[in-house]
Length: 218
Ligand SMILES: N[C@@H](CCC(=O)N[C@@H](CS)C(=O)NCC(=O)O)C(=O)O
Image (cartoon, rainbow, N blue to C red; front, side):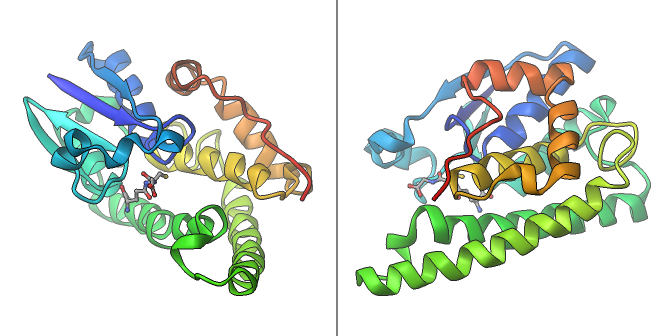
């Protein structure tokens, strides 16, 4: 039995898409449990017992909790290889994980500096400076992802949907929330619009109740 704890529009979208692809490829279903991050549900004693870090995602497998996106996705891929969410060839897999790790350990925390700036500075002027610098850095990272999307066919790894496609979609939504106009990243935007029509991605979008266009000028 698989159960995913997710926050709507959060990074947990990455394993969420993976679970939808697994359901389509293998018939293995999952339970999806929303966690309202804006209401602090990730800090309840029940949730902290699952993940003491107070973060989504958590994947519960037969009653045991696993956290960290890379660990969850590696587990899902190894258990359900028929979904093809990561390459089988060792070198191609390592290259995919290289991009995946960069997204998780570099791009994602850059956005955290914009969205949850209070975690990084106490004083308001310092927070404004952290946010400004992180926005510039995030924008440059999105340009790099746009460069990767130029070779998408139609997915980042070729003809198979992978976890890194889902992460790329999450980042473009976050860009809009950070006041970065996705229209300024036209190749990236076109790739994401196309990706959103892939059935596993569309199913995760529908369950989370999110829209692609989040842009608000700031
Ligand atoms: N390194 C963690 C990052 C998880 C993370 O940052 N989750 C965010 C959502 S994108 C979260 O739960 N934030 C809630 C909070 O900060 O209170 C992973 O890979 O799972």
